[in-house]
Image 1 (tube, protein in one colour):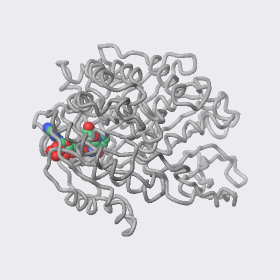
Image 2 (cartoon, rainbow, N blue to C red):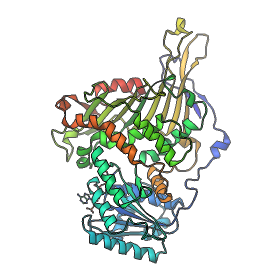
Image 3 (cartoon, rainbow, N blue to C red):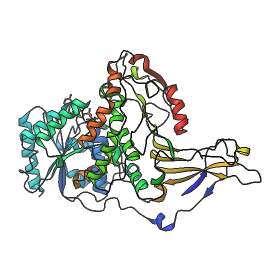
Image 4 (spheres, protein in one colour):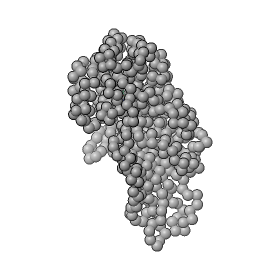
Amino acid sequence: MNIDTAHSDQRDDNAVVRCVVADSDRRQRVRLVETKQEPCTIVIFGASGDLTRRKLVPALYRLYAEGGLSDSFLIIGTSRTEMTHNDFRNIMKKAVPLYCNVDRKLWEFFATRLFYTTVEYNNPATFIDLGTFLSSLERDHNLPGNRIYNLAIPPSLYKMTIRMLGESGLSDERRHEQGWPRVVIEKPFGRDLATAIDLNETLREYFHERQIFRIDHYLAKETVQSILMFRFANSIFEPIWNRNYIHDVSIIAAESLGVEHRAGYYEEAGVLRDMFQNHMMQLLSTTAMEPPSLFEAERVRDERVKLFRSLRPFSHDLDSDNVILGQYGGGVIDGTEVPAYRDEHGVSASSLTPTFAMLTVLIDNWRWQGVPFYLTSGKRMARKLTEIVVNFKEVPHSLFRAVLGEHISANRLIMGIQPDERITLTFQTKSPGSNIALRSVTMDFNYLQSYEGPILDAYEKVLLDVIGGDHMLFWRQDGLELTWSYLTPVLDFCETCAERSSRLQIYESGSWGPETARDKISIHSRRI
Ligand code: NDP
């Protein structure tokens, strides 16, 4: 742990004070995967796509390399594109090293477990063939029939694919006498409340709730999970984690990337569907929920849902102070000129899709009454940054006011999620010397400094939990419905309101968003 000086108007020198991490902590080596998982077959729909090559197969390879997968596993890629097993293996062999280190010997074995077959998402016969293919492979490899159907396909295909899985008997637990079939659905789960309900009804027609895993990979990030430990495994924070001591909370998830090759999806989704309904809401619930009585999936999810129920609804007349919307214009990022959103390939030249939003969220419960939560997310911002900033209240009375003035910088706790995985606490100390002067110093806990070894990637954790049948880090339908319903007035405003064009502020790429939001980000998160 370090103590470093930080920016402060009361700072008068740059001294750095260091504390050393206890040796026992330094030596602590995290065993990433404690237990071997059950043998299983992972069936990836959309195997010719981006998510498969960038996230899913690299995560599965790392799990295998770290000893987290059973020795008996199969990965079956499937989509419409015609490919042989070897084509699929070769594509993955080129793609995976771009995202993780690959050991040649380990890869050789891993590749023997990769297979590919085609499927037409609207053709029942191809699903029957898929079932036959899976059963025969499982027989050859002595696998019990535990199956994960991972839907890495465009959301418009979810319902049809689920129906095909159901109608062909692939979802049926009774047919898998010694195994379990499970289904994993990527975000976004629906595009509004009605479609989320509709998708869930289709799912529940063919799958039991215990078989369904609705992903939010943000929840699986080590640092997000650690927030619950930080809050509920220490006795000193929870007593001050409320309206009596906290002035405001800022949750920011900024990206420097633009829409890249996903313009088709993003034009439909925008920042509210892409980030707020899922990741931002989960970061909010992790920060603000009440302590569950046990660290157990249903109890934790109950508390998240209770928090979502306490959100103060947006009025239909959305105040421009509470909802700031933006879209990136051109600019320069890392010395390179980047185009405006409307000039991106696949984006309409008159698009009104927001790529930035800052929402002021209020929570109507005893703990948080009157404490604003500023939720900000945007593309093409100054840099990639996800963090939660808890701003405490100033001291109630400054006995130093004769020398230092009325205001003393308030304490601030920052929980960094990416790229810096750390927790920092800023507080005031006396500057050395005969004058009375304060300086802000920062206690800084950095995950990577105190643990040796790699950190489990979010997709690895998600896949491990699906194999282990643990729902803790997955959405429950009631939570999804509450968050969709909470955001409906904002979505309606963005899509149908006559004022939407005048309310969409164009911001320069490489900045911290529209000017009105920049002031708030600067005050509440001190990032610019
Ligand atoms: P892609 O657009 O790359 O699509 C995946 C595959 O689906 C394609 O390779 C294609 O395979 C098939 N497909 C695409 N469009 C159609 C169509 N109109 N009809 C039939 N098949 C089609 O998607 P991603 O891999 O980027 O994403 C998959 C899912 O994961 C999506 O739901 C996305 O929202 C979600 N997601 C993606 C993330 C990412 O970083 N990529 C991050 C988080 C979630 P083929 O033509 O061979 O059938």
